[in-house]
Length: 121
Image (cartoon, rainbow, N blue to C red; front, side, top):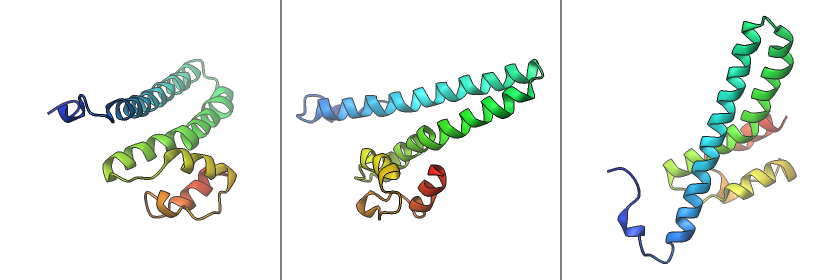
């Protein structure tokens, strides 16, 4: 009930599948850990009553981290839940290079293009 389907063991596509899975899990855990670290800096600034650190360190770090890597984590989870064939590399690269282009087959949810423009700004 937990873990990988045993059918993957010994198949030709086992290595690419497991490498992709491990990379995505690493991204999710890394983003969660970075968010926890930034959240702890908030409590540290609050303890020392440093509103400057909250406004000019904590808030910009949370916005930057989550508008890039938090969004990537959301895309990974949506892709897993929907079984989509969307290319996450393509989505993230063209979010910066061509933000107004049509997403085509890489669209994972309605309003994704608008969400990406807001996050980019």
